[in-house]
Length: 477
Image 1: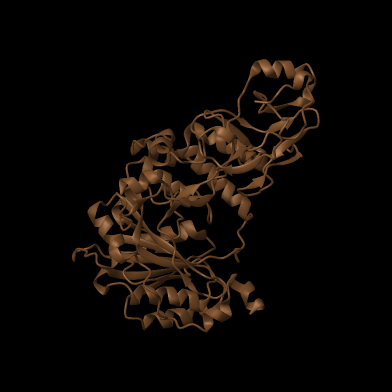
Image 2: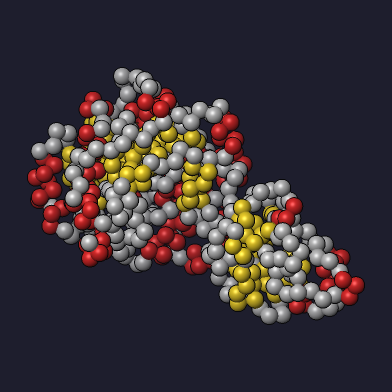
């Protein structure tokens, strides 16, 4: 079992012991089970890209689409082979799908092209009015398709995602995902799940069966109207392989007049792996940096500099020609990224208003505050300053918080320790005052009592890294 796990980074032995048409629980909210949808919903093509996928997970995906989709709504299934090397994915696969009761086409890429270009190929040869993209290790549940198509019928500029349930990579147990999370991103432009904010709950008047407006999508599973997909510029074909394309299309949808939703009455399971079994030409990091640089340059306006300070290595990457994407933005008269942050994602970890951004350095010892990749409720750390951004970047916000991503430095006791807690915006233990008079006074006693934030902001550090011994028992603010 352990040896087979390495092949696809999930328990292949367990997958092979499970039927291709296995039963799944109906995990929908009770209010979803009684909803009635129009008869004349648009038909969809389901596009599935695979590269060296396991036989059982790929075919279980296909079978679940066939078994749990109303036949009159399913135009076809398009399987795009991104240059797989495994023999069973060649002629054997073609012979197998020929016998299925739904038209299934297998398209072959002539070289390893990656998810983005393979999806573009699949979309271009598909014929349904709606294109539904799925990953190759998914399982659709009862009633998954109708609520997605119903939203698009209502407004073709609405792009919709199902709730993504978890299929265990170890046991293949099916576990319901939460309707109380939505998509966001952190300082490094990594997609993250966050709790649905109260403002979105209020907009839906507490009805959890209504779709959630989400700032970003995970990218693996979504449906979009074919004409609208073309209208907003499909994918950025200048991006390579995989990574960043989900944020790019999310920003583009919102900034250019569309809506992105998670339809809480639709559930699709997905095998979440702890590591990728694939290698990428040029290395994963280089590819993702290039893709992120392209989306930052085209869509993030002045906020791209925030990302570059966090990840300075990104600025050294050749990101190619973006003129066609900037022209697309102008042609569609898309809104600025500041509008997106204000109106779509006000809870973003990127503070819209901040005094300074950078490292917090003890100029005497050349040590910096470092979040040490620690998590909530853990102490902030100290490490040698490396000038590479990342864990040593903090922002001093207009709310007088010191933030590292979605965590704020918090002090409940005068003598510390300094903890990293979720930002609550209530000041209190997360309020950090800047007082130039005190700073000038302290400077007289030597630089070991002072830290700088990006060479522009000075803060006391008696409760951060140096115990302050000043005449008269001066207290820190």
